[in-house]
Image (cartoon, rainbow, N blue to C red; front, side):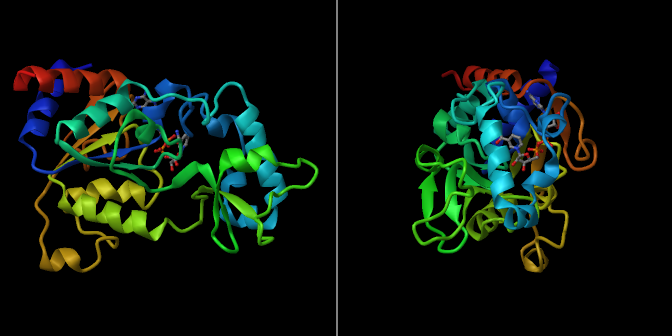
Length: 272
Ligand code: NAD
């Protein structure tokens, strides 16, 4: 890890007026949940087409069977995973008044478990299940308890099919999360981009929005309210399509290590 970049990030965070974080699957790999695209990631074990919304609508029983199989895969479980140093560091930055929100693409609830209070879940939360007919929500555990493997998919009391409340490919992003995330990207003067390959839109465009680069997503608003350019600091094990194009710099390393070093340095600089 380049300590001079840790120093730079700590100094910029202290000076920032409105810092936010955008996180992806990489922040949770140190909690034992594989990401999608790294070696050993989920796409090496499961067919991505299972997570297309149209496939769910066409074959809900098959998709549920695969999801239950994933949950039983002892190699990783969303339900027993615990937050790691990376999630904890972001919660500490919020407690310090530096970080205003975490926009996460993750569906694992680990930011909330670590104590982050303002979490914008861009892709939903796998710990909940929602009826596609009446929108009633249940906890995943509740549904698992009364699950009949010979009678999939599970159904709502209204008779509608239940679907995990994570956003599938081709499914709309929850409107509230989208509005809040765009507003945070527009408002921030610093964005930490942690553990995301930035390949999934529209989340992948949030760092460009933070940089004030006009996009289809920001619509007309930035014509009237020109955006102050934010610093974009990437923390990732590898470089991504944002590196050297959108981000000001990349701190290469494991998210837990890098973020906890940044928090330590901020505490030293602030004398706390
Ligand atoms: P991705 O799999 O496309 O990319 C993960 C990124 O994290 C890569 O750039 C990789 O280099 C980096 N990375 C891996 N381990 C790291 C570590 N310890 N420290 C720092 N960087 C690390 O994931 P993505 O960009 O989030 O996008 C894909 C989608 O994956 C998201 O929509 C998300 O919903 C879904 N997803 C979520 C979870 C979860 O909730 N934990 C797990 C898998 C996939």
